[in-house]
Amino acid sequence: MKDLTDLRLVMESRYPIVVLETWEERRALDLVRRIGMQQGRPVFSWTIVEGLRRLEIENAPSQRHASEPEAVLGQIRGNAEAGIYALCDFHPYVENAPRIVRLLKDIALRHDTVPHTLLLISHAFKLPPELSRASTRFSLSLPDTEQLMRIVQEEARNFTRESGQRVRAGREALDKLVRNLRGLSVDDARKLARGAIIQDGAITDDDLPEVNRAKFRLLDMDGVLSFEYDTANFAQVGGLSNLKAWLERRRQAFLDPGAADVPRGILLVGVQGGGKSLAAKAVAGLWHLPLLRLDMGAVYNKYFGETERNLREALQMAETMAPCVLWIDEIEKGLAAGDNDGGTSRRVLGTLLTWMAERKAPVFLVATANNIERLPPELVRKGRIDELFFVDLPEAAIRAEILRIHLSRRGEQSSRFDLARLAARCEGFTGAEIEQAVVAALYSARAQEQRLSDAHLEQEITSTVPLSVTMAEQIGALRAWCHGRAVPAG
Image (cartoon, rainbow, N blue to C red):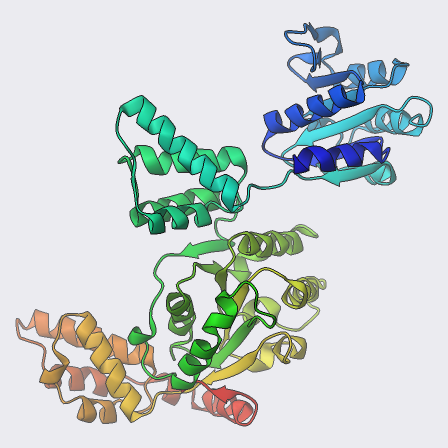
């Protein structure tokens, strides 16, 4: 009903041209038909295949003589009776077509005497600037949580009716499926709900990865925005005690829909391989929220304006998934200050900063960066983010904990090893380097057909030159910058 009311108000505002971008053509045509019947105006639909056809008259014949775009516009311009015309997939005929543009403009200019309304319905429509003052845009609303639940329940009933089997579904899995259908149209949500059900007659957590892969393909977000299935928990993260405590104190405030001051996000700065990415994943795991990853490199497009549009659509997608965690890894690579790209990076920064300041949806931003000096100062200041954390190289006790975690994850009893001695030997190692030492030692032990021992681990640690040595100057500069400017994460 909301779409019906809103579209009627738009049409009553006497815009000659209404651009309606949607994949749901049938739903859009039904709304137009109902509005025409309410207003007592004739309603026509047009396609290049059928030509003109009365929409509010059942089984009305097609006027195939008006199937060509120029012919149909000429007929509309010459018709003295005001009508509503829904032109489907008209977008290819407007580009580089001066006669078509002129006919559309003529119809718009005569709106005061013959108030035709043209609805240009397409999945995407770029209107020529000559028509911008005579047009407006309208978007169909997306189904809310209640509507999505009804769709899933309807598909479950359809499955039961067709197969004779009752759909198995736990409440938690059902809620997760509905939450992950957010941002889809009615038709697309119905398709994915049906696909999740018919595979095995059940709705389980196992359905969610494929549902989300299909969803991002439908939304053309594949590559720019991805759904991360492998979230972590802080039991898998060594150290970072300050960050863990900070997040724990704010968890309830973020998840409470009535909270006045909702946490907005954090920036994690530190040495490569220090655990920033794992910490970002662990935020989602700690708060039991979906984790979305925004690839700033994939946002960029060679065509003017497309980069900013990609970012806006990705951020809008994140809002439809709310509450969620949005992770931007190595953010400095997409927002480095400079004007060598025609100003694109500055426009991208402006788009992101505006969203960070004005968003209402509960999307918690976790940005990670290796080089803080490449980030623009506007991004780092308080108000844009809640806190700036510095992830330093782990101390001895934390290195021992990281060793324990990675040994345990690979089925090794950590009590068999002298973790304190090994931790001392890998001073200056990042968490990633410690993990790789464990992996390499396991390979060596298996190649020798031996059980993993301290000797295997010590050999790999000794043969590794850590990043803190090869990039000592850069890491020293990063530590100096963060001292007094960032909160230690550990």
